[in-house]
Length: 233
Image (cartoon, rainbow, N blue to C red; front, side, top):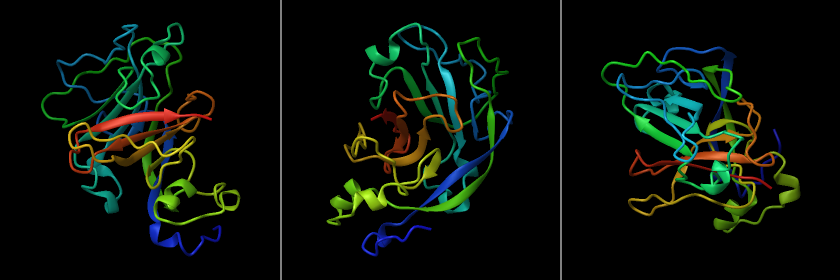
């Protein structure tokens, strides 16, 4: 492991990289793409602009996360859908890179009652499913911008290549492409915290802009308040 500057070591955070296998799993499983859990009377989410089905990106069963994160993000199932229709300008017109954009649908639900016999709708470039079967625990550290908020100056040329961890990950520190961009909770106004980092071309065959990186965030106090945003260079 890279030598971590001693002044940043107190800000170590644990992150977990998803270990996946090709294929789908149970409707309540943690997964990339595939079949999400939907209630029996619920329709597959659609884009409000083009009216096409949203691509299913990610589902996390919060009750089955690593032991260290049990109850950290609440209970239930976190889901993310996103409009990937290349024939329209949904992502541009609705500023898909911004938190709370209408072209993505992020929520935490409680899988209660009868589930829907899900049929995946036809859509462009449907993502192949990947089932999350385990998690690899890693040490993660903030970048120099976040370190500066703690009054710590880091040599970004020596440090940035290794931390924060790139790729898809659960918890840890966000890999910011442009700068610190935590959204604020719509209810209390407090800065939201990272739940899951969705990177370009990792477990999903999708690129946010020009090799951008996205983040699902959550209010620590209002755990049903979740958002997604991304940035690229």
